[in-house]
Every structure is written in C-alpha cells, then in structure tokens.
Image (cartoon, rainbow, N blue to C red; front, side):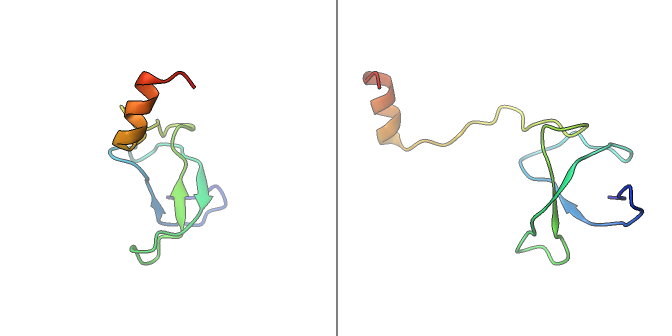
Length: 73
C-alpha cells in the first residue's frame, strides 16, 4: 500500500475474500498481525473501496441459538 505521505507499507486485509485491485483507495489503521512478519497495519473493511465481508454471520453457541428462538428477551 502506498500512503498519501509517500511511504510504502504492507497491510493486512481481514476477513474472507476481498474486492481490492491495484489502484483501490483504502483506509489503513494500526494493529499488527502476529504470524506475519513486517505486517503492522490493517485495512478497514467497509470504507472507501474496501467493501465489507459478504454473507458474514456472527457465531453463536448452540445453547444460545435455542434460547433466542424460544424466548423473547
């Protein structure tokens, strides 16, 4: 990724799959990735040219899934 300040960095794209191409404009935040040496930045999904993760579902335990269907909280 080339920043507007002229620096070139390596950034991580979180989630499964992405739509980014060579000249896409992205928002970068700090935060390293422990198992990738030299990667100290993340790309923010859902901003500018980086769309959010398609069909993303948040995990639930089987017990909570049962409760949420039967009880009105």
